[in-house]
Image 1 (cartoon, rainbow, N blue to C red):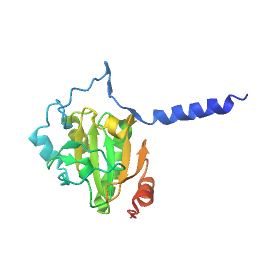
Image 2 (cartoon, one colour; image 1 turned 60 degrees about the vertical axis):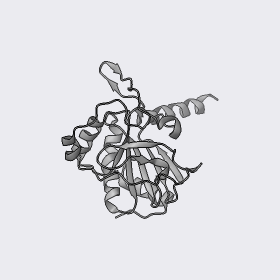
Image 3 (cartoon, rainbow, N blue to C red; image 1 turned 135 degrees about the vertical axis):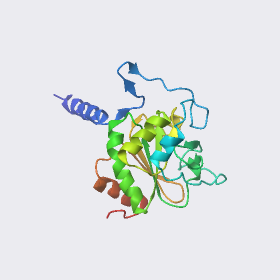
Image 4 (tube, helix red, strand yellow; image 1 turned 180 degrees about the horizontal axis):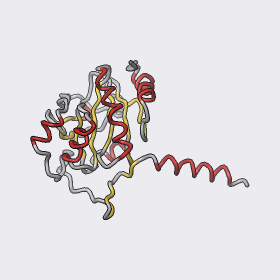
Length: 211
């Protein structure tokens, strides 16, 4: 009888894991092995076609400061390639305004469900929203954004360069970063509705983004 609480806790933890995607996509034939990276997050995946990039019509990736020192409590000093048009993005250089960063992939069902929430948040103009497409080829990621009618900027980390730096093991994951570049909160797992996202933005960034 004394073991019952531990067993219940283990069962609850297992249930939470079910709601998150594995960090590597699966296909009918088994797990997909990511291809080697070129060190800048672009990877050896084939780039998306200009036609698909134009169709996605993403907001240009933000300019980032190449010289500001990285913070110990901030984003890692890594530069990732823009998924659409725009410059490469140095994560540690994302300063000047509160920012929500969402890690996602086209093969992750909870990520697909979250995308409209972040699109609505980006549309308020109260915070900057940037996606990081991980362990995914650019064409698949852009195709999902076209289907979901999502246009905020994303960068590409096809081969998990951020995994050891952000310590993520599954998707989705969302980081809240203040204007000074400090990571104030990491939300692991799916954000299920706008009220939850608005609450997190207000609590961790001090911004009221609710309608």
